[in-house]
Length: 386
Image (cartoon, rainbow, N blue to C red; front, side):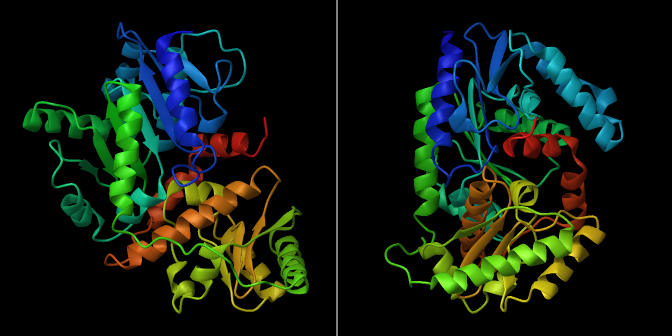
């Protein structure tokens, strides 16, 4: 096996096994070959933990991938047409024997601009800062001892525009520090780690996460209050009924409960915290933040779901029922992802609220994600649909 591919599998599986680092099919990894001609990168919609020598990656001609960022004509296109064009160009850049339906990551042209090994994650620890109104100032203090300071990337629509912006910011960074940044924090998005070796990238990921967590409030662990089976069954039946009424469809209903969920539900301002969508992942996989359910009224919940749909939004897939727990609506494959997204979300919201307030996607940013074909493709694969 090519060493670059072996390194890619290693960094993907090591980071993908930890749900606090990435949820669902999110996150990306890449490794460039020693001769600088090719780049192995995670395939879109594939979970990092599932990558193997046979599946979950594509190999691209590096110069062809870089040409996408440099193409001024693409920048002039209407957003949705532009993003479809980028998908086509990245597929054209592929040079491998992969036969199954597998696109290279939609951020492949972004990875092409960075160092040899790239790990892009959506960790809850970093999310607490990139979704906080004072997050960047907190990060600057937290990482002030770094020889090379982190690079902050203001929120930019994912895809082509993000790749263009990061390419410009990295060029400016190189002029100032004579080296590329190793740590990039992306507002309302996540974390990029980029180094010259796979082992170095994994070490840096762990160090950055530990540093971020050192100042954050961690969820309580240990025994939780026992919830009666009758209460759980009643809540599940209520959400099932509401889902059918509100969406006109049917799905499976799942129940989750742990110390983090119990602790969040006890917060006086829990309902207020569940306003606005944090990241593209939360929107794509869970339809936005969990709906706070003070009282299980199927008709009232159905009305909220219908209102979301009528407004052209994705409907919620998660419901935090006060005194009961988390109810998720979705397939057997998708429900654990919804659960992980909610745990990620409540951790971020709790900590961001302590750092000056929660920073969420605005309507225009949500609309871009909702209409982006690449995210629909990613969700379809994560849900087990081909």
